[in-house]
Each structure stands twice: as structure tokens, then as C-alpha cells.
Length: 374
Image 1 (tube, rainbow, N blue to C red):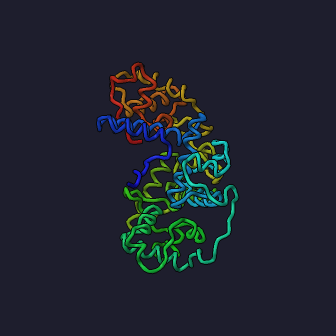
Image 2 (image 1 turned 90 degrees about the vertical axis):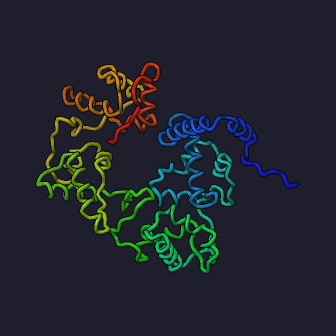
Image 3 (image 1 turned 60 degrees about the horizontal axis):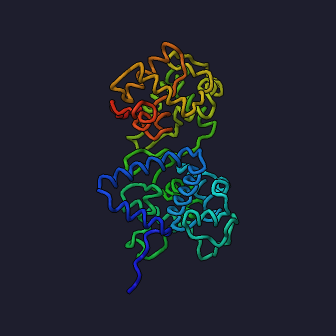
């Protein structure tokens, strides 16, 4: 009799899995939710050694899923450059976090080793290279069948379908063939599927940005465009509202305009008035935003929890995310204090509910942890 296929590489995982399967379904779901939250926090903002190991393993697994095989150093760098939205750490950082060679890192992630190991380049056979027209035709075919321009995930799902793979012709099954065009979006433009400013949508209906990295000229141009529409230098909230209006005006025409968000502008220049100065615009003042002319302060997790406790002490129950937001705006206007915003807290602790639990006596069980839309 053929031996039963093992689900996990590590025998310890088999034991843990068997224990999990004995739990009630609702407890399994609760365990999965808590584990996902812990992993998400570790991957997004790794600080401890164990968090860094989790973030490194996560990055290797994500790239292996994109490529459908273990990545060499060259493969990893190519995916990191082509898909900046994945927020992958540099390959050198992964080796430092895991304390091993590249193949050692792959083994730590339970991935197969690669023949070129730590070498950043490897020979490619001529027969393995896709012609430009093969790549472009694959994008046209995929778009025609899906009914819309695909994301990279949608394309791979389509290209790896059994019925598609049985058809005549070749279709790229990794990201490298699209890189000669500058990425999937550029390949879609070259194939005539979408225009230079054509809109693409994620599976949840969200409009995808034209690009994930903005040049300084892009930011300056966006500020000048909004200033021209307003007739003066924009405040941050005004810029964000006008940016949305431009987006709403162009979207019915099937186009989007690559305007960086307010947060991108701030992060690039450190503070809002510095960005305006770079665009040769006059500085602005807004009493509800005391940090327009200086860099945002950095808060430690302990300081963030202190601010939550102070807000709770002043507001009482029910202490919701919306309550904290109103308290923050009111306190800034009256005292000018620099207080961390709600998205900052949610990113640090994995959500408002978790932040409440860590900050308040008894986990803050007396009030609602319901989040609010920023």
C-alpha cells in the first residue's frame, strides 16, 4: 500500500495539526484569526528576532507563489523590483535575518534549494525565452476571456488553468517575461489592451494605481495641478479631496491620473509645507493640523497605548474608534498636542480591537471595538 502523503515537512507540525483538528470548528476559526493577526503584525513591522524570521519566511513564500518555484537571488530581486506593492525586504536583509546563505534561507522556509544559490545571475537557454509577441498575445487572450485587463494574480491563475495549458502555443508562467516591457501593466499597454492612463481594477473592485513609485516631479506636478484648480496652495485635506475629484472625473472615461496621495507627499518631504516649497507654492497654516510645518513625531508602542488610555479616561464608555478620532481632533484643536492617528494605532497593533485590549484594564471588554473608516 502506498504510504499516506505527509501534509507537513516537519513532524512536529503534524502533531500540532492533529491537535487543532480535535477542536470545535468555532475554536479553530478563532485560532486561525488570532494566528493571522499575529503573523500580519510581525510581517508588516518586524522588530523582534522572531518577527524578522516570520517576515523573511513570508517573503520567500510569497515570491515562490508568484514564480511557482523557489527563487534564486536574481529571481527574488526581479519580483521585488517589479511588484513593489508586496513590500518585500531586500535579499541581503533576508539572509541577515535568517543568518544563512540563500539556499539555507530557502530550507528555513521549507522551499527547495536552487542550483544557482547565492549567485545573482544564471544562464538562460534560448529555447526558454518567450518572444515578445507570445507575451503580448497571452495578455490579449487573458483579457478577452476575463472581460477586463487582469492583475498579475489574475493572469497567473488564468495561465495555469489546465484548459489553458492544454491549448497550442506558449504563455508565460512567471513574471520575468513581462519585465522586458517594464511589468504587466506596460505589457498590457504594448498589447493595445489598455491605454497609457487606462484604469485597471483589483478583484474587490478597487481601482489600481498607475504606478507604485512616484518621482519628485510627479509630486510637484500634482501639487501644482491642485493649486491651479483651487487658485491657491492646498491644505492636506483640500489636496486629498481635489485628488479624489480628479479621479472621479476621469474614471467614467476609463482613465485614471497618477496623483500621489497626501501621505505619499508627506513621507517624501517630511512635512507638508516642505513639499509646497519644493513646488514653489506658498506655505499654508491650519490650526487643526499643527504639524504642517514640522516633521511628524515618532511614537513608541508604549506611548501609543498611553494616548489610548488618556482618551478613554476622558471619554469613558462606549469607547469606539470613532470616539477616539473625535477626541483626537478636539484635543489637537484645544492643546496643539501631537497625537497618533487611528490608522497609526491600527497598523501598530493589528486593529482597533487589539489596541483597546492592550491599553485598557481588563482588555477594555466593557465597550465596543468597532472600527471606523478613516
